[in-house]
Amino acid sequence: MSSTVIISFAVGVLAILLIAKLVGLGIGLITKFLTNSVIGAFMLIIVNLFGANLDITILKALFAGIFGVPGVIAIFIWEKFL
Image (cartoon, rainbow, N blue to C red; front, side):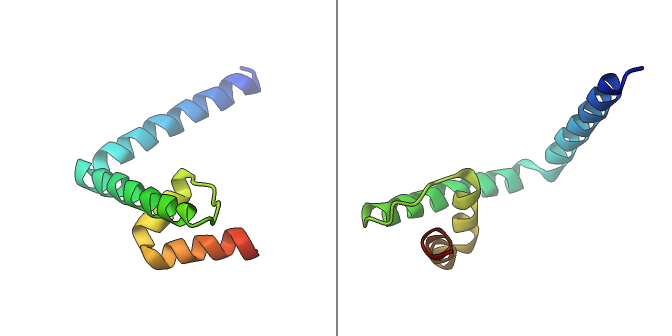
């Protein structure tokens, strides 16, 4: 067996395990993360309306959604000053 086949098999097994873990988390937790991401993206859009010009990514939206206004402030400081 070549190393490509072994690596492909390992990646496939890891993908199956990840999907099984996500299904096991439950719909409620996944829905909560999606809702928080949408709220976080909305907060970042509002900040961008005031001229902040921040990039909005999924991770930043989730961070802002989980931590709220302090998360948005942390993202702003990270983008502008660090």
